[in-house]
Each structure stands twice: as structure tokens, then as C-alpha cells.
Amino acid sequence: MSKQGAQSAVSISAFVVAAIFAYRKLTESSSSTPVPSVGHFVLGFGFAYTTLAIVAQAAPELGGMFAVLVGAGDLLANGKPLIADLNAGLKRTTTSPPAASRPATAAQVNTATGVGR
Image (cartoon, helix red, strand yellow):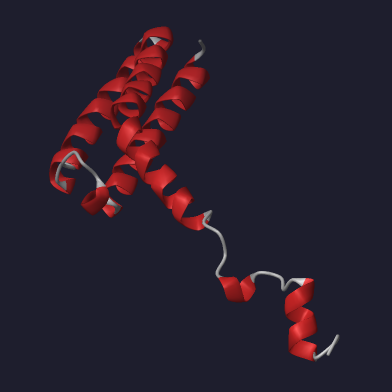
């Protein structure tokens, strides 16, 4: 892995971790596991990714792979509640439409228009 590839891996991993934290923070009432405070997250996030960026500059292969490992670990650790929340949201949007928005049957149209009387 080149230095540029390692930098990309650190950036993408940081984005994934920050996005997962933001999503969990926004939906923490529906999450089963507690979400850490923003201060704890910023401190840990800053330390971890500053260290990863320094390692990626000194040893790109090691830094890049550690960044991928951190991002994948966070996704695996927080993936179950995240997927459960997404599935619950999708199930709410895929329910059958109310009766008023369904197309009318031929019998309903005939009754409403007086055809066949």
C-alpha cells in the first residue's frame, strides 16, 4: 500500500466511524446499547486517528491496514443495532397503502357511477 492509499484508508475509516457515531447519536432513543457522550467520542476519535495518521506516514502498510481494521471493527460492533434500526424503518415504509389510495375495483366504480342499475 502506498502512502496515498494509506491516507485514503485513514480518511475513509474516519468517515465511517464518525457517520456511525452521528447516526447512533441521532437515534439513541431506539438503540439498545448506550452511546458515549460527544466529549468522550471526540477525545478517543482524535487520539486514534491522529495516531493512525502518524503511523500511516511512517509505515503506510501498517497504518493503512490498522485504519481498515478500526473502521471494520466499529462497523461490526455497531452494525447489529444499525441494521435493526434500518430494517425497522424500512418495514414502516413498506406497509400496504391505506384503502383510499388503492385503485378502485370495477364493482366499486360501477356502484359509484350508477352503471348497471
